Image 1 (spheres, helix red, strand yellow):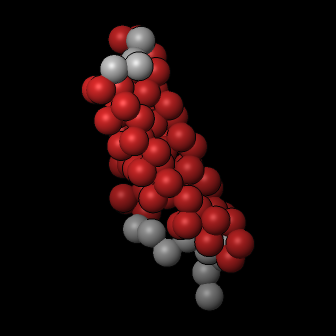
Image 2 (spheres, rainbow, N blue to C red):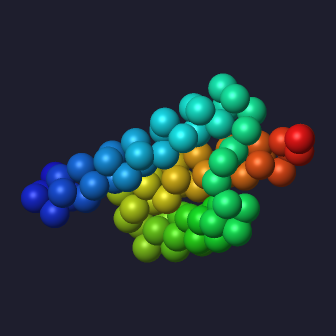
Length: 85
């Protein structure tokens, strides 16, 4: 692993871990305080970047985007199913 990959790996771990507290809170409370538009755009973008990173063979970028898409998709599902009021 070269220096660039190590920097990428650290960045990936930090970025993915930033979603963990929000996702855990969403699962625990069954409520998602995030804006619906933001979540939809984020899930779409992360999914497209996951596909792109797979096609170019970048495993760090692939893992980052896959985990980001997965965690934000959890928030999206909860947002779509949460009851109003």
